[in-house]
Length: 151
Image (cartoon, rainbow, N blue to C red):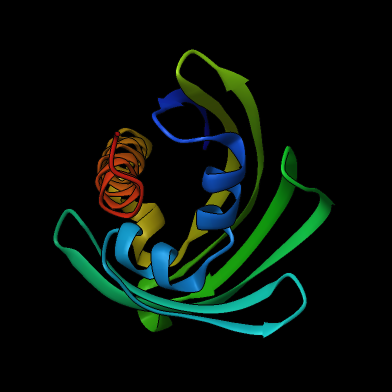
Protein backbone atom coordinates (compact mmCIF):
# COMPACT_ATOMS: atom_id res chain seq x y z
CA UNK A 1 0.00 0.00 0.00
CA UNK A 2 1.22 3.48 -0.82
CA UNK A 3 -0.23 6.78 0.26
CA UNK A 4 0.89 10.38 0.12
CA UNK A 5 -0.50 13.77 0.92
CA UNK A 6 0.01 17.17 2.42
CA UNK A 7 -1.70 19.26 5.03
CA UNK A 8 -1.55 22.95 5.91
CA UNK A 9 -1.14 23.45 9.65
CA UNK A 10 -1.99 26.65 11.52
CA UNK A 11 1.16 26.44 13.68
CA UNK A 12 4.81 27.23 13.08
CA UNK A 13 7.17 24.68 11.63
CA UNK A 14 8.92 24.39 15.02
CA UNK A 15 5.62 23.88 16.90
CA UNK A 16 4.57 21.15 14.45
CA UNK A 17 8.01 19.50 14.67
CA UNK A 18 7.95 19.47 18.46
CA UNK A 19 4.44 17.99 18.48
CA UNK A 20 5.31 15.28 15.95
CA UNK A 21 8.12 14.21 18.28
CA UNK A 22 6.07 14.34 21.50
CA UNK A 23 4.79 10.91 22.64
CA UNK A 24 1.86 12.51 24.50
CA UNK A 25 0.67 14.34 21.37
CA UNK A 26 1.07 11.24 19.21
CA UNK A 27 -0.88 9.10 21.68
CA UNK A 28 -3.79 11.55 21.56
CA UNK A 29 -3.72 11.91 17.78
CA UNK A 30 -3.12 8.39 16.43
CA UNK A 31 -6.53 6.67 16.09
CA UNK A 32 -6.89 3.73 18.47
CA UNK A 33 -3.55 4.41 20.14
CA UNK A 34 -3.20 3.72 23.84
CA UNK A 35 0.59 3.75 24.23
CA UNK A 36 3.50 5.75 22.84
CA UNK A 37 6.65 5.60 24.93
CA UNK A 38 10.15 6.74 24.13
CA UNK A 39 12.54 3.78 24.33
CA UNK A 40 15.68 5.63 23.29
CA UNK A 41 16.85 8.37 21.00
CA UNK A 42 14.41 8.51 18.06
CA UNK A 43 12.76 5.22 19.10
CA UNK A 44 9.27 4.59 20.42
CA UNK A 45 7.18 1.65 21.59
CA UNK A 46 3.56 1.92 20.42
CA UNK A 47 0.32 0.02 20.95
CA UNK A 48 -3.01 0.56 19.24
CA UNK A 49 -6.30 -1.09 18.41
CA UNK A 50 -7.35 -1.31 14.77
CA UNK A 51 -10.54 -2.55 13.13
CA UNK A 52 -10.53 -3.49 9.45
CA UNK A 53 -13.83 -4.94 8.32
CA UNK A 54 -14.74 -7.75 10.74
CA UNK A 55 -11.18 -8.06 12.08
CA UNK A 56 -10.26 -6.17 15.25
CA UNK A 57 -6.76 -6.42 16.64
CA UNK A 58 -4.39 -4.88 19.13
CA UNK A 59 -1.02 -4.12 17.64
CA UNK A 60 2.21 -3.65 19.55
CA UNK A 61 5.24 -2.39 17.76
CA UNK A 62 8.02 0.08 17.40
CA UNK A 63 8.74 3.27 15.52
CA UNK A 64 12.28 4.31 14.64
CA UNK A 65 13.17 7.71 13.21
CA UNK A 66 16.15 8.14 10.89
CA UNK A 67 17.54 10.85 8.62
CA UNK A 68 16.37 13.30 11.28
CA UNK A 69 16.77 16.91 10.12
CA UNK A 70 15.06 19.19 12.71
CA UNK A 71 12.71 20.97 12.16
CA UNK A 72 12.32 19.94 8.53
CA UNK A 73 12.14 16.18 7.97
CA UNK A 74 12.63 12.59 9.04
CA UNK A 75 12.07 9.05 7.86
CA UNK A 76 9.88 6.91 10.09
CA UNK A 77 10.08 3.11 10.05
CA UNK A 78 7.32 1.14 11.77
CA UNK A 79 6.81 -2.50 12.58
CA UNK A 80 3.85 -3.92 14.49
CA UNK A 81 2.48 -7.33 15.40
CA UNK A 82 -1.19 -8.07 15.94
CA UNK A 83 -1.07 -11.76 16.83
CA UNK A 84 -3.30 -13.94 14.65
CA UNK A 85 -4.72 -10.82 12.99
CA UNK A 86 -1.39 -10.21 11.30
CA UNK A 87 1.31 -7.61 11.05
CA UNK A 88 1.99 -4.19 9.60
CA UNK A 89 5.31 -2.68 8.64
CA UNK A 90 6.62 0.07 6.46
CA UNK A 91 8.16 3.49 6.27
CA UNK A 92 7.12 7.08 5.85
CA UNK A 93 8.92 10.23 4.80
CA UNK A 94 7.67 13.30 6.66
CA UNK A 95 8.64 16.89 5.87
CA UNK A 96 7.66 20.29 7.22
CA UNK A 97 8.15 23.65 5.50
CA UNK A 98 6.92 27.18 6.21
CA UNK A 99 3.78 27.98 4.24
CA UNK A 100 0.73 30.19 4.38
CA UNK A 101 0.00 31.33 7.92
CA UNK A 102 1.78 28.33 9.46
CA UNK A 103 3.50 25.39 7.82
CA UNK A 104 2.90 22.57 5.37
CA UNK A 105 3.35 18.92 6.32
CA UNK A 106 4.00 16.50 3.46
CA UNK A 107 4.12 12.74 3.84
CA UNK A 108 4.48 9.57 1.83
CA UNK A 109 3.88 6.09 3.23
CA UNK A 110 4.78 2.65 1.94
CA UNK A 111 3.29 -0.15 4.04
CA UNK A 112 2.74 -3.90 3.99
CA UNK A 113 0.24 -5.93 5.96
CA UNK A 114 -0.03 -9.68 6.38
CA UNK A 115 -2.16 -12.29 8.12
CA UNK A 116 -5.95 -12.10 8.44
CA UNK A 117 -5.88 -8.36 7.80
CA UNK A 118 -4.31 -8.89 4.37
CA UNK A 119 -7.24 -11.16 3.46
CA UNK A 120 -9.67 -8.23 3.83
CA UNK A 121 -8.77 -6.90 0.39
CA UNK A 122 -6.59 -4.03 -0.69
CA UNK A 123 -9.43 -1.53 -1.28
CA UNK A 124 -10.77 -2.00 2.25
CA UNK A 125 -7.27 -1.73 3.75
CA UNK A 126 -6.51 1.40 1.71
CA UNK A 127 -9.81 2.97 2.78
CA UNK A 128 -9.15 2.30 6.46
CA UNK A 129 -5.60 3.66 6.13
CA UNK A 130 -6.83 6.87 4.47
CA UNK A 131 -9.54 7.25 7.10
CA UNK A 132 -6.99 6.80 9.90
CA UNK A 133 -4.68 9.39 8.29
CA UNK A 134 -7.54 11.89 8.00
CA UNK A 135 -8.59 11.21 11.60
CA UNK A 136 -4.97 11.71 12.74
CA UNK A 137 -4.81 15.14 11.06
CA UNK A 138 -8.16 16.24 12.49
CA UNK A 139 -6.97 15.30 15.97
CA UNK A 140 -3.54 16.86 15.36
CA UNK A 141 -5.13 20.14 14.17
CA UNK A 142 -7.38 20.20 17.25
CA UNK A 143 -4.46 19.46 19.59
CA UNK A 144 -2.34 22.18 17.99
CA UNK A 145 -5.16 24.72 18.34
CA UNK A 146 -5.59 23.70 21.97
CA UNK A 147 -1.86 24.08 22.68
CA UNK A 148 -1.28 27.13 20.46
CA UNK A 149 -4.55 29.11 20.21
CA UNK A 150 -4.64 31.91 17.63
CA UNK A 151 -3.95 35.37 19.10
